[in-house]
Image 1: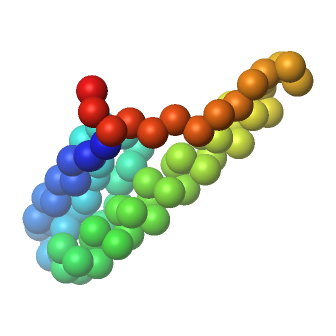
Image 2 (image 1 turned 135 degrees about the horizontal axis):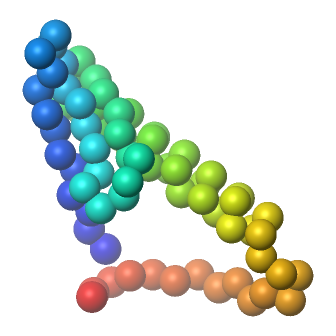
Length: 72
């Protein structure tokens, strides 16, 4: 699976970065490289948080397995 990172020049300098497909995955950086690294960290944190929230709400008899999206 591939996601789309968008880098928007900020008026005060640097870049705002977001992942188009994941609401809330937003970060910033002084350079595109820094913004890219910060965005990857933000995306990891969102996915970890969503996982924790989902596990807290699922029934004990739930079955969990890894899913990999290779092609849609």
